[in-house]
Length: 515
Image (cartoon, rainbow, N blue to C red; front, side, top):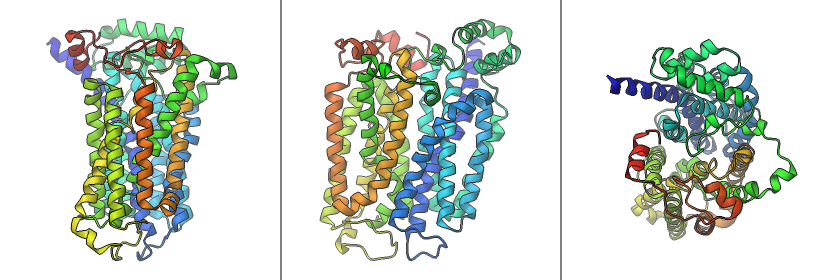
């Protein structure tokens, strides 16, 4: 009986987080969908009513991160007055409008306008989504359930390519529209977070919400936890870095609320507790975008078409995005076993090798530029005999890239800052992420034009090695440690081993028990 109660307690929190993750799924689909419309609208031999030249294509791939940056700046503003659940429900409306707009678009400017709306909405969604998971889960489950947020984005990218491989891009947009529609139906059945309800002086609703979230139990059984939450809310009002949002190691916080909450001064930025971790993390966020993993995914259909992949170019992109999902899942468990630092170093080295091999293969096959014309002859006739090599290399590139380098900054960002610097640091770093993502996408085709396809991936290989060196010399192991902040403030010696207290500690971590 006791086990059944505990299972229900966990299951109710999993349900709440998974429903919330439908919005992250929609965000991932909007990003992946760009990889569907680019080959459809850039082929001069297609019969589409919309055609985009190279300059327009570059902007098509870059608009969403730029618009997301702007949207995230306003995310906290709607989250506080409307609530976490209320914000997510309302934001499904522009999601639906965006997908319908893709279907109805007849000119390129309409595609650009829709991309802006979709990107802006993605930015707005981030704060309520991330705060919701922090406020509805127990500390023992929060880290694991929070990790499903990035995983949901990867699954969304996979679904976008899967749907796009089976349907025309307009019909694919209509099918994708069902995700936010299902999301709003299920979100309406979820409770608002008890934290927000208490901040709005609604204690009875907050009690009912907590009882729902702890296994659909009675309010009496959650009274002790409710009193603790009430105390936390009274001590840390809205807009303040609330310790109740964190797990035992401080890993989970509202990652986009920061942009509105943080008002940094020159003195704040000059503090050692901020400057040292911020410099390292800023490099890692920029580096994770300039290694080419995200950009390659967006242009994957065109790349596979250029290399004359042995399978349908859309199916090949589905395989590549599925490798991304598997890598994201594997990364969760590998980090627990070997730590973030070692995982990042090994995957960065493997990514460098993949980039070098892709460049060598392109050079040997005389592939210098991307080929947007789907039915033209291959650049080098003989390379079709071993075209499976390009398929294998690009799938491996996506896999190792998402095993560590692409996800590393997000797993570190809440661990390296002191409490007073955390919101400010996370906010600025997320801005760095969006700006660097925009930059790498908008310059990718120019880089291919100037350096050739092989040159671009050799450049990615060099950037991977630079990141590997920075990780080796400057990044300590943070997994399972509570002295990471001291390392950056007072230059304390921090060993690169994973800190595990005991066998009992490991078992508790894996099982999700409180420590």
